[in-house]
Length: 173
Ligand SMILES: Cc1cc2nc3c(=O)[nH]c(=O)nc-3n(C[C@H](O)[C@H](O)[C@H](O)COP(=O)(O)O)c2cc1C
Image (cartoon, rainbow, N blue to C red; front, side, top):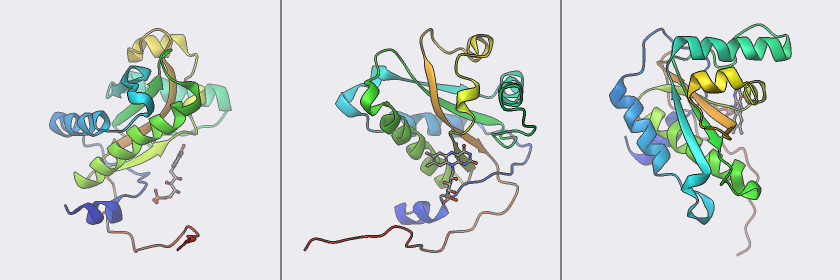
């Protein structure tokens, strides 16, 4: 896809089919994350966790319900969750910005592959400090979840978004 076509296809998808994401597609998403910029070249500051285990995904949902008292799946039943965590080497001041760069690269790559995805931040606090979950997900000691991308095959046909002018733009010419 042309780059601007990818930008138009990027959208938040919150309803998925049961179809799994193929290994080749997962590899491409991981590669997209590896190509993301991070401040101070600090690639040691982050760890990407690729979660397809149904039990680990279910435990995320359970942790969310326990902490918030809310039913429902905060990652919308997506069969793949790509979690970005900071390590003790992260530079605190820029950690969230760096993590967002990884997520956006994967979000765009998912759009290019025809997959649906959505940036997930709201439920992350519910898995932070969940030692059993972190162990089951294989997070290294000291890693702190920051944000994630839920990915799958969209239950609805995806169409390009119209060009939107959401942000105020000012010029100093
Ligand atoms: C930092 C950030 C956090 C977000 N967290 C969530 C989230 O926890 N759950 C969710 O459903 N969408 C989340 N979103 C997706 C936004 O709601 C979505 O991008 C916005 O509504 C615009 O829609 P679009 O992505 O289709 O253009 C998040 C997006 C960003 C950038």
